[in-house]
Length: 192
Image (cartoon, rainbow, N blue to C red; front, side, top):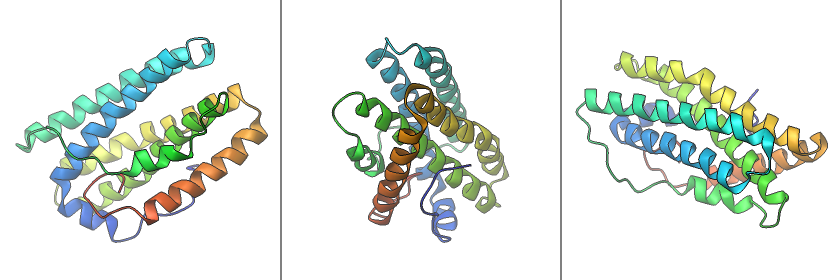
């Protein structure tokens, strides 16, 4: 079950499909950033044993996804390069409290929500990409991983913090994420 407080508007998927090359470049950056975030958590919290193995495996899987998206870009003749990111992640992370242990809890839950939104958007893209069956298959193939990554972050939070605290904070993070999306500029990105 994805813990989201809002749905992506119905017109997003056809619009994103019409700008799929730019969305794909962004998607590659998102996969790379997801790997980097998992590795960053490993370095920031080496004393939290429950994080180490799952986040290490997650980082490897995210890099595999990065490489897979790069293959699709190459097949389409689209160069991978720098791209101005959407403000989504930066604005979402503003909900993270600065003091530990709250910082860790909030970071894990923000990561969970990003993965949940990715899962939702990939499902929508898979259905909208009728003219690009290889890309539709790519997004269908990533759905289970994104949903699993979402739950991994929620489960890690629940392992480290009381369930009641996780649920309450997840609700707050999801409410904040819904507001971030409502005010986001319309640019062809996975999270806009």
